Length: 217
Image (cartoon, rainbow, N blue to C red):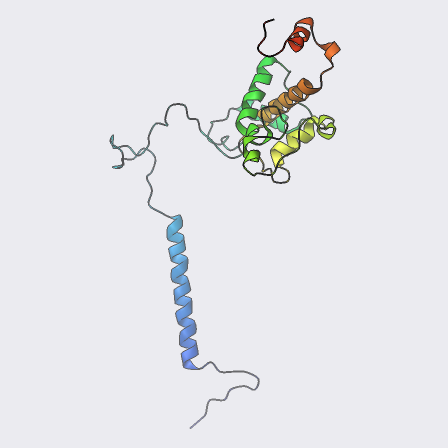
């Protein structure tokens, strides 16, 4: 009758420990399958019937006033939502050191609109950092009217919108590159509004400065 010899320096696993190890492996495999099931959830395929909606269609028309949104300037390219010309303009805007578009009133209006949506809650309507979010406890950003930011290159302001800075997050996913440049143009207009030399104003603007609020012209 031969005996089972265990090599020196090795340790034999007792049967209860081996069974426990096997059980753990089986449980872990089950957890992995459950995790995969969360990824592969039941879903409708495009243009199939769906009983959730009254018309029986799984695909519904977006509500009025909405538009497709994606993360990043090129996210919709493969779907054809972004045309070749728009993609090319976005690439130019993202790499430029200054606004590649000419400065027009329409451009400033676009920048003001985007600023009011994404920037004004923190930076305030006039850009002094006293926005409604700040008044409710959010850290106050610096005023755009300090000398450091008045002298900052346009590209630096563009990069802060793109990458974020400090507690400010990146807005690259919300604001397209050309709109970031439009915001920068509007920021320059805000800065100019607070630091313009009176002698450079047209006569009509000078008369308005001399007129007190509530008084006639």
